[in-house]
Structures are given as C-alpha cells and as structure tokens.
Image 1 (cartoon, rainbow, N blue to C red):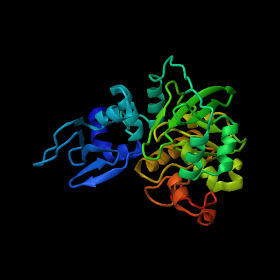
Image 2 (tube, one colour; image 1 turned 60 degrees about the vertical axis):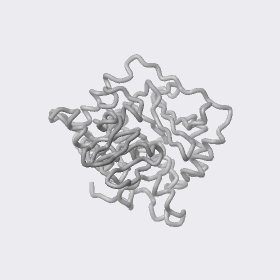
Image 3 (cartoon, rainbow, N blue to C red; image 1 turned 45 degrees about the vertical axis):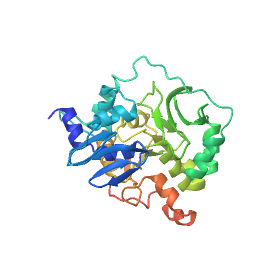
Image 4 (tube, one colour; image 1 turned 90 degrees about the vertical axis):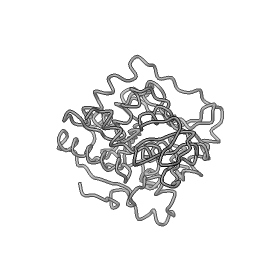
Length: 325
C-alpha cells in the first residue's frame, strides 16, 4: 500500500479536523464542523463533502479524502499536505524509524525560504487577554516570555510565538501564529521555520519538558507555578516534528527528558516513538512519560478545567505520569 493510500486509510478526517482547531458535531450518520456546517464527513467512507446534501446513502458536493481536507482547510499544496499528514498520523513506511523519516522529509521543506516575522502591533491587549483569560496561562509566564520576545501581537491581532537559535539568540528559527478570536480559530506556521529547532525555552536546566504545542508548554509552566524555571521546555509544533529533540539532546546538557504530549492516539504514539528513539540513541538520558491524566485531553484543557487548588496535586515532576516508561 502506497503512502497516500495509507494516509487515507489510517488518518481520520475528524481527528485531523479536531487537531486543526475545528469543533466536531454529530449529524445523523455523518459528522460536521461547527465552524463550517456545510461540511459533511463520513467515517465509514473516509471522505468529506462541502456544500453537501447527504441523502439516500450518498453525499453530494465537492470534497475528497483527508489529503484534500488538509489542502482545503490548511492551505497546503498536495505535497505539503502529504508531509503534514505523515507527521500527524505517525505513518511509518519502508521500515524506517519515524525520527529518520521526518528528518529526511524536512530536507525538502523550507529550502531557501527566509523566515520573516509578521509585522508587530503596537498593542498586546488581544494576546494578553487571549492567553490569560481564554487559555488560563499565568500572567507571570506570559509577561516573562514577552520580555524574552517569544510572544507578541501582530497587526492582525494574532498571537505570534517565536523560537530562537540557542547558539545565536539574535537568530529567529521558528514562528507560529494563533488567532485570538475565540469564535474563529486560526493557527499556522510562518514560512521558513526550522523544524529541527522548534521553540525552545531555555532556563539552564538539565530537565527538558517536551510538549506538542507552545500553548501546552505554557500550560505546564503555569501548573508548575513558581518552580516553572526549574525546567527547559521545547514545543515541537505537532506530534510528528521530532527532529528538534535530537538537536537539543546532542548538546549533552539534558539528563532527564519529560515527555508531555497529549493523552490521545497521536500524542501517545509520539511519546512512544520519542521514548524508544532516546533510549536507543541517548542511553544516559532518563526518559519519563507525563501525559495528562484524563484520556483525550491536552495540558491546556486540563489547566482550563481544573481549579488552582486541584492543580496543586499535579506538581510536574512527575506524579501525574499515566504510563510507565
């Protein structure tokens, strides 16, 4: 089976739509999106249609496979969509380890593309409200990361997260956007990102926390409270962007790797791949799982759902571990 066929067979359109930030709603024997109610998704047929009129067991309208969905709603070219879905679905092929696959795939991406940060706004009001009120991130964490120029607001009121080369802190290597409008979610990477670096928060620690998204990393910082600077953090930008882990472990500073991906299929698969890769290639590094204690949840969802009193039981080193490493 070719890689495209495997993607269509193994990657659920609803799972990927949820990952993109859409809200999935059941509609008879189909699923739709709260944000785009003209979309109909059939899990059985592994296809979606837009401007649909499902009847008589058929759904009419334009659409296609999960690859077409990623192209339509993610703005990807076909090749970009395939690479994105390989990463998202942790698709393995040709018996090659996933870490090596993603590294090879990245060689074809962002070649000679300069990373230009979006123009900054004079205000941070929308970003500040979004992160603190909507996302429940601690004000102290947001303020500190703004001082480090790792968070700012662009002229379209998007939240911009910025990563720097730890060997040259004047060099931007990664940037991604998050819309601050709660009712119209938007996310995306800036062209030219170096996925072998990700977004790294350096506090001079020998403990490195690996999160999928920067929002999750900040959520963990918030849960850690006054102890958040006892760890370094890396946000991979997705479950398939593992090569950044190798970049930082090669520095030789990390003694303990704390894998804090989401507690869902993609996050668990990613955690297991990362663990196996690190144990094989960095045997002196202690690896621990720390997934959110509730199945299907990420760290920001946990943060928003729990009171501060309840969060105190989740001191992060690592009593909330849900799987043995």
